[in-house]
Amino acid sequence: MNKYLYVAIGGFIGSVLRFSIKHTAVFPDKPAIPFNTLIVNISGSFILALVLYFTIETGFINSDIKDGITAGLLGAFTTFSALCRETAEMLSKGLYFNVGFYLLLSVSGGLAAIYTGYILAAKAVAFIGNTGTGKAEE
View 1 (cartoon, rainbow, N blue to C red):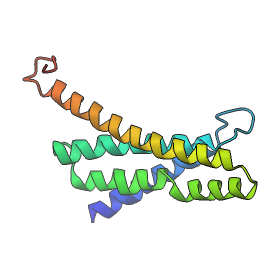
View 2: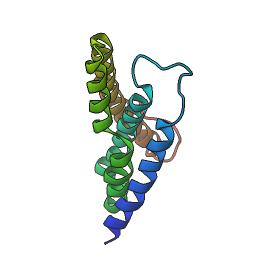
View 3: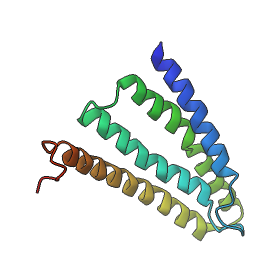
């Protein structure tokens, strides 16, 4: 039952964070692509990589808490549906270059964020776990 509570709490936090970021003016003028959604999805990918590394590779994060963060918080925070809606809106306006650029940034940025998060988590674990000396292994 704890798992569902963690997912519900994470979902609440994630949806409030996404709502807050959506209503924050990243750029004063209306940008060519929806940067708020881009920021949410890429940062969510980065956090997902960190959480999954610490859960799967080290067991550092409890599985119920992992579900609360991944399915709850990040599931509510990141938004594929907004990406699709915004893409469809740009397509209906004939902004084909913007659509291509937005999708390219979304996919490549998400993959880069996952990779970076995984590498940083691995380096952090190696640094911390190196016999407590505070020096990373070479």
